[in-house]
Image 1 (spheres, rainbow, N blue to C red):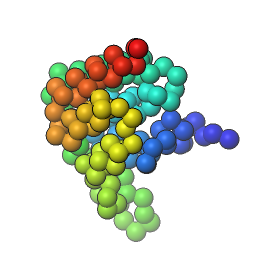
Image 2: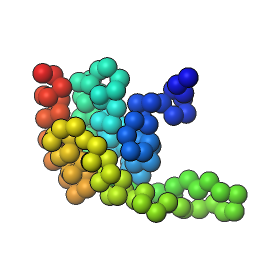
Image 3: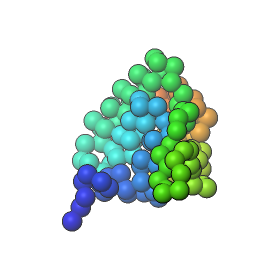
Image 4: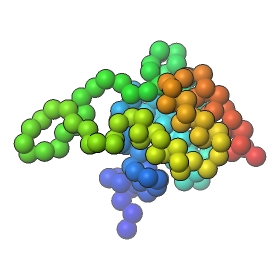
Length: 135
């Protein structure tokens, strides 16, 4: 049985679970990534991509980084509490891994834009993805 609460299929489909990447970002940028991640999996790709674009524009207006933000990450251990990241789970490594699973050049451009924290290129890639999904 599918667990739509703890580990939904549309966020687990890929090389890792979506939250590993999105929790490293601001709320708006994380949501933008989330909607791009799932846009082929929930039967309404145009709507998901439009939501991603809405969050992207909001993040840009608020001058949010289109990359990782500084915050403490959850540390799940009985030994300690604090900041912890597994090796290979930094933002750029996760983007590179995800990029290898992209299905279109525009999707790769989206993740490339995040690699360089380029909001304009991310928005441009989202607009292209929407046009492709509308066809």
